Image 1 (cartoon, rainbow, N blue to C red):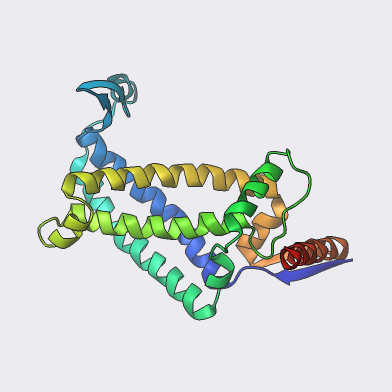
Image 2: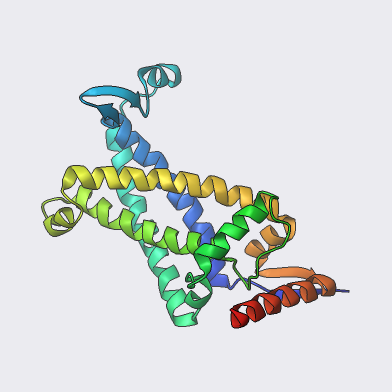
Length: 237
């Protein structure tokens, strides 16, 4: 016999799905801005060994200089990104959902066990409730990354008006580096997140869309036993 269990609230799903296209547009428009001034690479003693986008890349894709277009989209959608993120943070605070997202004292140790399980090295599923330890760390980190993008973005956008933010970021040039590094972090997060969704299966994906998850009694009992077993181990230690 199967049961329907509520898993994700409406605002949690709303901000999740809005954030995906908004951040995609931010990265897309940000690349137009970066391509207009391709300044970064890996250099040692003045010799550049790696350019993030070499000359053949621009020639192959026929990328034009679209700085004005990129800035227009970037500075428009940054407000949607900011407001959506602010709504998400306010919701997690007032609903108490932050308790399920914040890492705990054993989260980093348990996250390693989650990784071993995902790699099929460890058969036992680590104890978890709504989110496992790796998800707690990842979801908390993405919030901090979003905050970092807003701060460094404002420092780059208005370095004179927000001179104090620019100073906190280590100057205009360093703020640009941090902003660019965070963008790379989003790309890696997306790739890993999509892979995890694919591995978790259709039922998990459906719960993020509808807010409900279809589970069997045997699966539910198994999860409760694993959670209880993990709690008992913590008490004994």
